[in-house]
Amino acid sequence: MANQQSRPAGAHYIYHPRSMRAASSFDIMQRLALTGCYELPDLAIPASGRLQRAGAVLGGWRACWALAAQTGLPFTPELAVNGLNNGGFWLPDRVGVGTLPAGLRSAEHWFNTSLHKGDSRRAFETPPLHRYGNSGYNNLPGPGLILLDAALGRGFRVREGAQLQMRLEAWNLLNRANSALPNRIPGLASSDAISHTAAPARQFRLASTLAR
Image 1: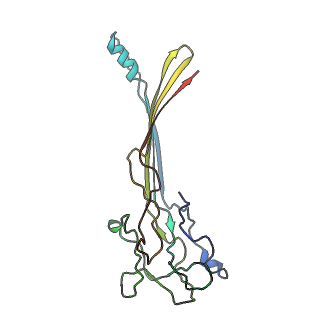
Image 2: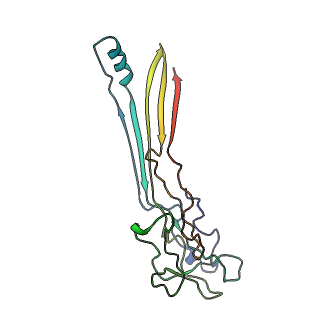
Image 3: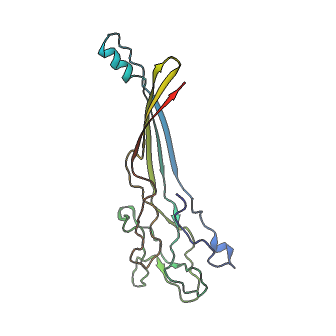
């Protein structure tokens, strides 16, 4: 998930290494991970016939789940053109925060990409020709992520010394659309739009193994 082209590959100004200090592209400021399992007790039903067979099937199941919630990975706004005439890339000047309030962020508009000097809410400006921008690296946060995986399984004795293990597994059980990083190039028609996800949609798998 960290390999999402979050920043330029090279150095902006090789003669000033301190200007390249920044959070790593896989920096996660906050992360919560919870796991749990619950084993259903065997249903001891004294009655014979169908009720007894139903108790043998319904009891003894084991349910497990894993929840992961984390803040987004950082990314680096970069200008679409290069006014440095050095064959590399061009960072903008940063004059504002750039991060939109949570209620205004969406897949179509994730951060403030305005470069117009007449916009009082702009966060970036295009530097004069042949001057390096001061915006820096990995200074805006991307979308967070929430994943819930679960599994339900149990073993059935098929003969002495052999057991059939049955499992129903689910990934991204909530079917949440976990967005990837946005287009980080201000000044384009597709600026700050998110075009793909960082995790697949909900998936199920039914598996069985014969254990001895």
